[in-house]
Amino acid sequence: MEMKVPGIFFFLILISLSFSGCVQQEIQSDLLSEVHNNPGMFDSPYYGISFQYPDDWIFSLQEKSFKLDRIRELGIGHAFRAAYTNNTSGFSFVISGSREDFNPHIHSENFSESQECGFAWTDDRLNLTVSEAYNPVTIDGGKARRFIFVIHDPDIETVETYYDICRTYKSGKGTTYRIFWGTPSGRFYDYKPVVQEILDSMRIYEPS
Image (cartoon, rainbow, N blue to C red; front, side, top):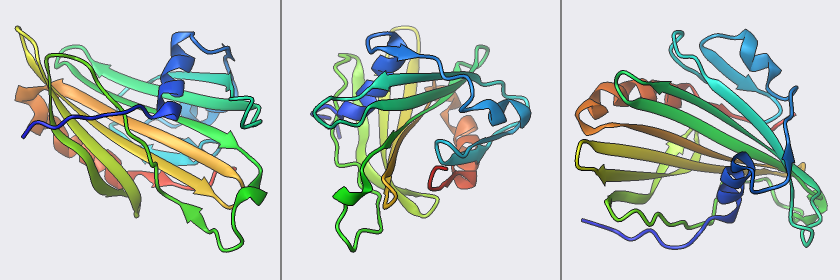
C-alpha cells in the first residue's frame, strides 16, 4: 500500500544542507581521527556511535560545523557523513549524524534520556513508492524509525532504506543519526544481511 510521507524534519535537513554548502560551515579535522586507524570499525566518542563493517569497505568521511538557530542560542553544531559505494553492484551505505550541546537545566528533574525523534519529512520524487514509513524498530536497545522507498526508473528499479535515530542525554548532549542504504532491487536480498550485521553491531552511547 502506498503511503504519503508528510512534513520536514528540520535537523536532519540541516545536516544535509551543511554538506551542500548552504549553511555557514568549516571542516573539523580532529573529531573523526580515530576512524582512520581502525579498518572495519567506525567508532567516534565525540558523536557517540560505533559499528563494525566489512574490512574491504573504504568510507569517504566528511565533517562540518554549522551555526545553529540564534533563537535557541546553541552556538555551533557539528555533523559528519561517512559513505561507502560499490560502483559495480550499485550498492551504497551512508551514515550521517550531528551533535548539539545545550543547557542541561532545561530538563526536568526526573529526566533520564530521550529516544524520540518526533519528526516528519517528505520526498517529492514522482517515481517513488513508499512501501514502509515511520516503522518503529530497535537499534542497540533503543528506538529508531525505518522507511523503505522504491524508486522506479526506466532502466533500473532501486530500493532505498532509511533509519532515523535520536538521543538526548541528561548532560545536555543531543545526537541525531540517519542511516541509508540503497541497492538495485535485484540485489536487495544480497545486501540485506550485510546491513543487518552492521546494525546489530551498532552501539549508540553518550558522547564524550
